[in-house]
Length: 367
Ligand code: PMV
Image (cartoon, rainbow, N blue to C red):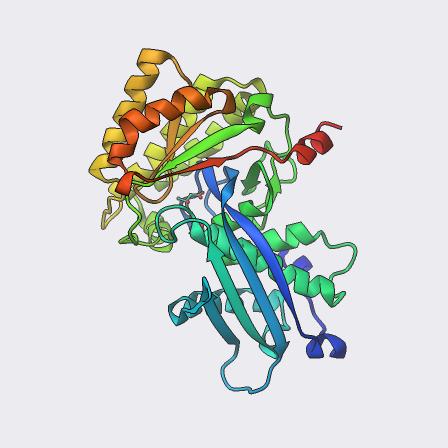
C-alpha cells in the first residue's frame, strides 16, 4: 500500500465548520525486537515487534473549532495535566506538518490538546509512543465524526500510519498485544508505513505476560531517540545490525509460536544489549544505562541461574529496566524485586504493568 492511499483530498464545507471534542487513551509499548535507525519520512531501517502495555498510557482530549484568526499555519494550544505547556508545541507542529498531506483540514481549526500520562514522561518509558498514538486516534475520531473516512479505509491502520509520522514506535501502540511494524519478507501484510497486529500463532503464555518497569532514572534523557536514529546513518556497525535483526525475526516467529521462554529471553536480552551497544559505538557515543541498570541486569541473571525462573530484561532508549515474565510467576518475581531490585530504583519506584491481550481480543483471534 502506498502513501497516497492515506490522503484526504477534499474538504467539505460542513466539515470545515464542525467543532467538537474527541478523546482517546493509548498505551505505551515495549519493543522486543527494536527499531533503531530510519530513513526518508519515518521509514524504519529494520522491522520491529513490541508488546503493548496496559497501565502506562496517555489520556488525550482534542477540542477543535473553526479557525478564528489566520496567521501561523496551525493553531494549537497544549495542556499537560491541565496546565499550559507551550514547550511541547514545537513537537506537535512538527507532527502536524508531517501529516498535513494526509490531513488537509488541519489549518482550518483552532485545536486545544489536553493530555495526561499515567507515568513520568521522558523517562525512557516511551511517552512519545502513547502521546502520538493517542493524538492520532483523536484525529481519526474527528474524521469519523465528520463522516470523512470512507468505509474502505481501516481507521486503525490510518491511525497507525499517522502515529508513525509523529514517532515511529507510536504506530505499534494502536494494537493490543504483539504489534509489528516494518516490512519483512516472511511476515504477510507487514509494512513500513504502519504497524499490524502480529499475524501468526502466539503461544498462550505470551498472551498473558507481565512487565515490571524498574524506574532507575526518571529524569529527562540527555539525548532524544531522534538524535540516536540519526547517528545510525553513519554508524560503523549499522548494516550488520539491520541484517541480523531480519534474521532474528525468522527465529522469533517460531519462538512465539512454540512458547520457548528461554529462547524468548535470550532474544530480548540480546536485542536490548545490541541497541545499547549501538549507542555506545555511535560517534559521538552516548550511554543511557546507569550503574544501577547494570546492577539490576546482573542480579536478574544470578536470580535466573539460582532459581530457573523465566524472568528476562529488556531496555528502551533509557536507563530503566523492563522485567518480562509469565503472569503465573508473578508472586515469586515480586518478592525478588522487593528484596533485591527496588533498592536500585529512584525512590524505590517501579510500575507493575502487563502486556496481556484483552480477553475479547483473544477470543476473536482464536475463532
Ligand atoms: O519511536 P522513537 O523514535 O521514539 O524510537 C523508539 C526507539 C526504541 O524505543 C529504542 C525502540 C523501539 O522499537 O521502540
